[in-house]
Image (cartoon, rainbow, N blue to C red; front, side, top):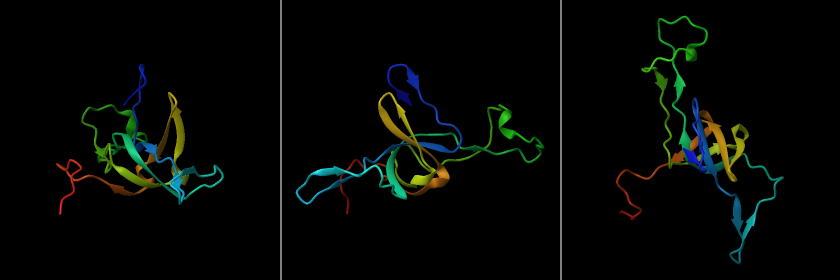
Length: 129
């Protein structure tokens, strides 16, 4: 993922880079009010910005203690279930907040994602019955 004019972000392992929801709530008169910083929710939502390649799986015949050290191009991995653009609900406790070029992101392991919402293939935002 390209961030800024000179940085490229690459997510590793089974981690997911998210653009978190702002956490604002709408008042009765239509004003958006930010949540107090002390209020920590247990779950949050966000949009997937980038994903890692998945966790490496050791070859059945390998006896290495560190299977990730081999750099075989046909490396077997546990595939990621999330895709870029998915909306996810995740456990807040597992997230790490980062700021890159003034933008806020969160990094979570795929195992911390509880639910994902994905637009069906071929749907362009038009409601179907």
